[in-house]
Length: 609
Ligand code: AGP
Image (cartoon, rainbow, N blue to C red; front, side):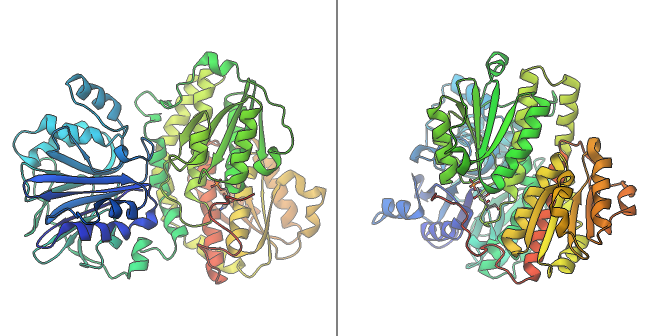
């Protein structure tokens, strides 16, 4: 996610802005910039690259002024480059803004402003806000900001400055974090507490819809109707390291709990709730184009590979296209049968995984059309694939991938619905039903993550085991693969996932008394078979934990324990079923004293073969 900082007070702003942004570097970024009120003019300095590049740019000529805002950019719309960096200004330079989030309707707004003669410099969604400030300016800063908020849609933390009212900064938020630090004769703004904790521990944690006017002497908060809001001071008692993790003990746990937002952001601009359809403006595929595709390869590594297996079920069942899923390190050497009617989808959180990149290049060389699904704007996969679909999970710091996986399978499901409609293999009513189900997912995921006590108990109970098995059929098997990887890569427990029907062909020999077996049972069309397999392992005295839908009392008859997930469509179930598995792995690793965020022998991005 982007990082935002702001300062207004008695000291020079630039040093705090640079220091504050350095405290947000852990969030990942590709460019940085600051805007400082120098006398009556706003001076804007920004560039692509690390903070050191910005420091070098202003070395010896530091902006002078006691009011300013700064931004580290995690690109979502528009590749990393100087002109796409924040802050953004209108043509006059009198209106400046920094933004974290996604302005969903920015294209429509941009077209209207272009028609009125506004000149845009960047490809970003954010720049429309600075031009809107100029267009809607009515002589009153707060009033203009309220008008802007009535026009834009999406998710945002926004911080505004204008030369017309140089003694104040205004900030507001919706679905993105924003805090105000309260000082003596000075006040601070940041997207996250680490940026201000060295200057003050007294804060206002902003809530959606609140608009704050921040001056050196005070902070006034109101809602869009002008109703004053009295904020309670929140005193931060975290240390700096804990603050980076948002108060969570590990980045992995923080990222597990960021999944409702990551899923919501990845759906933004693609799930059309009004028409109950899926669109991919960045793809603009057609029925004719899709009709030419007679084979899809999905190629990836690790967790991304597991997301690809989920994607296979989606694309074959909803879009009726043959799909082959390959581990990238195998694909690149096996001379796959590819031609111009083949679509090769590579999935990669980092967009830099060596084997996946090599597979992408091999597919292109063999004439395939290529699509990258990645979480990093401007990454190698994004640059080299013919087209790219971004997941908007935000930076994933923990080595064990969690929110990237859920946003990857979400992207695959949205793609399958999109392609299924284009190929007319998915009925409109069924597509609408799936879109309605997707609209409920962020809240259902949030609800599930608020009830994890039972999962903690199981994790502690079985943390001493040296073997664990994950069983499922169909999509449950695909998710079981990810559950096994999570457990083994951070707790070092040997874990294997098996297609439930395959167990009796050998591995059942390993099922003995006390071995924990997690059985996923969300797929109605193979439910009875899965329950039979559950009984098979139960008959060998295994300890069985089932994962099933709320209301499924039948599972209790056979499993030792059941972890329930919200009832949802079978295609949406993987988004929910993986969550208990992520948490089981996390708490088991914790119990075993493992280094959860940095497991032994592993790297976050495997950029070597
Ligand atoms: C998953 O928890 C691991 N960190 C690893 O398997 C990872 O998914 C794999 O290395 C692929 O990385 P990528 O998505 O960045 O290409």
